[in-house]
Image 1 (cartoon, helix red, strand yellow):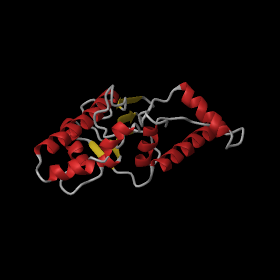
Image 2: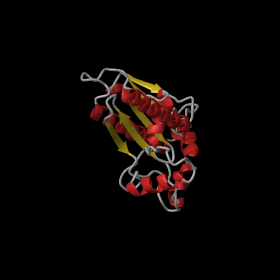
Image 3: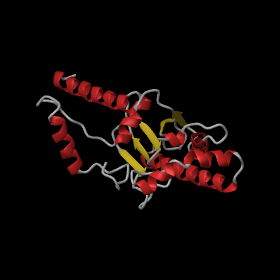
Length: 213
């Protein structure tokens, strides 16, 4: 990502073309490519390749991304610091990246009872929770009555547990008030493994179609 650009970006036709061109020099000519939002790989890392549920990423950027079993998708946040990415802490732009270094400081201050630090964290928690609620509601992942269980994969340094101020725990509490069926998942593998599982899933589907099964 060039300096001065935000750390999370939209997948545009130009990016797809560049990715395919770059990859074509590394793989055989008959290789197939699938370009997805990085949130898709993050979701798959928690569901072990099954694209169903919602993922919340909160680190240098934030996004809530959901997928239904029939392939419908929805997202919230992830638009950058100007348009609205309120749960995030930093971007590739150096002026935003400095904020990332303050996260441990803010958490530590909040744990010591600092009111301003607690307000900052409470606001971040609320924004992150609302982004998930928006996605889940749009896709009806919670069922018609709002009580069905659904997986929520949690990814990113901001969501890592702390001594007293457990940001991810607070986010889950907020979401549970609206959707009691939320099932938080902390991936045991990296998103890269999720991407590999997705590729394997695509391969299996194509194989079944070719074999008529």
